[in-house]
Image 1 (tube, rainbow, N blue to C red):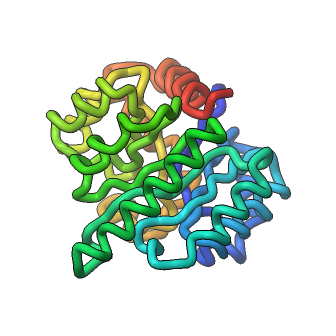
Image 2: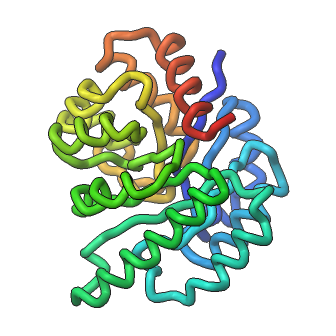
Length: 251
C-alpha cells in the first residue's frame, strides 16, 4: 500500500483542535502525510507547532488573500527564522471576493509577490489559492522560478488548465470531484504527472459527505474516484500520485 499525501489541508484550524492526536493516529494508520497550509501569523505558528508533533505534518506557512491586510513583516520574519523547518509557502494567492476596491486587490498582489519571492529565494514549493483569478495568477508566475507550483482546488476552464500545464504547474482535486462531473472532466484533461489530491479541510462538502467538515480520511475516496475516471487501478494511481507529490515537494 502506497503512502498518500494530502497536499492541502488546514490542520491548524480550530475545527481540528480537539482531535489533533486522533488525526495524527489516523494518518499513521492510513499512511497519509499532509501539507498543512496556513492563513496568517497565528495559524502559521500553530502549523509549525503541529509539525513538531509528527513528521507526517509538512508545514506550509504564508498569508491567505483573505488576510492580505494583516501585518506582513511578522510572517516574513517567522519564515526566515524557521526556513529549515518549513516545507513550503502557502496558502497564498489572489481572490477578488475578499476586496471591495482596486486598492484592496493591489494589496493582495503585493503580498502574493512577496510570498512568491520568498519561495523562490528559499527554494520552497507553493500552494496557491486562485478563485476567479487564474488569469492574473498565470500572468504572474512566469516572473518567478519555483519548481513546485500547486494550483489547489483547480476550478478553471480547459484553456486555463492547458496554460497551467504548459507552465509546469500541478493541479489538485478534492472531495468535490467525487460528485462534480465538471471536476472529473478537468481531471481527465490534466497531465498525469501533474495530478495531486487534497481535502482542503475543514471545508464542508455536500452530497455524499452531508456537509461534514472534510477529514483527512476522505483522501482515499478521492483517489478511488480519480482512478475510476482515469480508468486505472487504485494502487497504480495512488503510486503515480505519490510520485507526483514527491516531485512537487522536491523530496
